Length: 467
Image (spheres, rainbow, N blue to C red):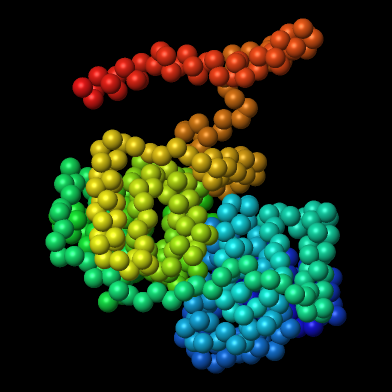
């Protein structure tokens, strides 16, 4: 069989992900593996018709399509995202239709699931049958157990093609949403209280995104700074070279870092506006997010209030919503809200934008940052462990930040707590004590919190402040 590899890495033949493909090639010599270097050659594919036709012919003539890509910023790299946009823009879906797809990613398992959900949905939108995923840690290929797992996965993928396996569709097609938002000309402004409000966008003329951005800027009485991310003059997408790891300096010498320092760094309130294209925002936004990796694995939005304006069927894309929410939370920011234009109801969108503006100022005044949930807590611990274990020699900027901010908190440095926990554990080895504790377990668990409720100094201060 001919299995067309769509490589998402901008590093081409030197891609870590591609070594997994080469391993598969060695194990299955009876099959051929033509490669489309979508990540490396995106500018050529976009600008040269001959290169595009050649890539499309490889896909058309194949028995299966196999995505092989690193995970960049919770998704595929911006270069591969742009390739997928081109497929839809140029009506090239028939080249993929009815083929069987699968996806292999490499990462440190940080939001690899959202990257796979994206590729799964895209495969189905292109009329393919998605036969499975393999998510590898970057170092997994060194393990013989993982080598065998990879070969079993790929063998099952080949079986799916051979037997024409019936695979139910998992993601519903997205509805088309036409621009229809015409904001009210009457809006009550919100006092910014001196807070720096920045609205970033990539809106096109006549779009709902453009209308929402204008309305949001008006709600801040014209005191919001509005900037088009295309004005950051990015020469290209993230190269995955990790040269920024030492001192947060990107290998590119373009306007992106200056743009970031001018608009993102000083913002108290950051509103990001985008339009859904396929199952994410635009490739421009993806490239912009990828390029922000020069900050490393640190909360680069710490302390900010973040909101999103989204044009398109967001309610049909829980995977995208998860990425947007995690972008704020993992960045150390507070997610104020997400407003979508999909409802098409002017009064509803006007009210939602007004509420977002008012709430962002109020929460900024209060310094409120929402509690962390699994994605932020697990993500921080994953980064902590990976950087400590083997990445800190290269990611020296991250290592310095983690040391200075107490991220290396394992095992706990609360020695009294450790001694007390160990002593209590030994105490529970006494049969009579264990019996008593088991009998009164619920009371033991809730009693300390009941005491807090009764004696909290914060409650007294809160009541006094409200009087």
